[in-house]
Amino acid sequence: MTENDTDAGLVVLTNREPYVHDAPNDVTKPVGGLTAAMDDVMREVGGTWVAHGHGRADFDVTDSDGYVTVPPEAGQYSLKRLDIPDHPYEGYYYGYSNQVLWPLCHEHVDRIRASPDDWTAYTAVNEQFASAALDALTRQTAESTLLWVHDYHLALVPELVRRQTDGDVTIQHFWHIPWPPAQLFDRSPHAAALLTGLLGNDRIGFHTRGYAQEFLATVERTLPDAEVDTDALHVTHDGRTVEVYVAPVGIDTQTVGELAESPEAERFWRDLSEREGIAPDERIAVSVDRLDYTKGILQRLDAVEHLLERDDSLRGSFRLLQKGSPTREQIPEYERYQQDIFEKIRHLNDRFGTEEWQPVVYLDGRYTRAEITSLYRNADVCIVSPLADGYNLVAQEYVAANQSASGALVLSKFAGVHTLIGDDAFTINPHDTAGFAAQIEAALDAPKTERAERFQRMYEQVAATDIGAWMEHSLGQWSR
Image (tube, rainbow, N blue to C red; front, side, top):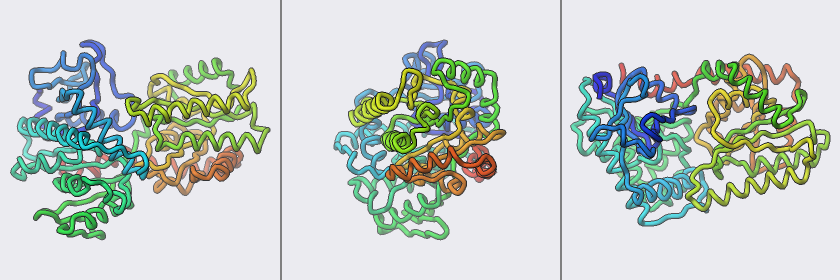
């Protein structure tokens, strides 16, 4: 560890690591989203990032305690990698985190698959993270120390760490996914344990006030001894007061805009257009998603089918570019969902396609940040249609990539970011196929001046709540 790592006083905990070593000299770096944004902050501030190490050569480059300095070319902060055995990790991540908490918080109760062994694994891995956090904290020399825990994977960590510190550490948590209605969360047999874990924090952050209020309602319903102040967003529990705050996560608008106009982005679009036969006057919709059932991809494809049924003038002149990234394929539910998507795309292309044109182009593989922004930059419409989403970075990146042009955003009212830019998006309920299709058509046909005015207002909102604002809201109080 370097002096910068210990002087900073910041320890970050996430499940996912920012750098992966596939070989000692082969490192995969963050290409976008929150991981890349937090890497930027850590590079500036310094400190220690604790995460699960899963690269083939991750532990070939660490010291005996699991620490390695990153990024490899600069060495600006420490990454402590946890070597978690496969058995507890699978139960913790693929089991409890993503077959209980993920569907529960996204209100897909029918997809919950609970196993007692998974809760045991979730508890054990949280204990391992807590132990690693304590190790990293003891190495900090700064007068003020912050432990910043992230997301639903690590809900028990704050209380576990709290038990073993003397109150000289500020513990803070950010919950990145939706918080469901109180009566829904209360169905979990571990609701009280999860809430007690989270109330080990000094501060807990959410994207929207709605999520924060649902969290407080859940605490009030599940923990009778807790005192909840819904106006001040405070909880008093076990003799301590916990602040609940609202800070919507943003993006680096300037960087996204610059990447969208880069030579790499222009070259990518030129090559893609040539390969897929995209005509200059063709109207393009784009969607970028992990292949997760919460993203509303099948509902989106149903809407495109309905649109092409009712307006045959779009056949040959409109297409959807669907960038997909497989995720959690070890979970049978996800594997089936991904196959359903591919079957639906084949159905649409067989039904409406010709030798020269296909209504849906599926794009897979790993894309650079510039290539993703190129898709946004050249799309007439971006479709973001989750059935539930904590916030959503894609919608913001689309707006930022088109800051000197114009486009149209078709946005689900169930995305957290709808609270920020929903007034100027073309709002949809993804369950309403006909209404969804009508809004895609409205976005395509809106007058240029209307699209430009809507887009400008959205850009101003996205820029005002960018990643810097989120970091200031999250870290500003501690750093002062």
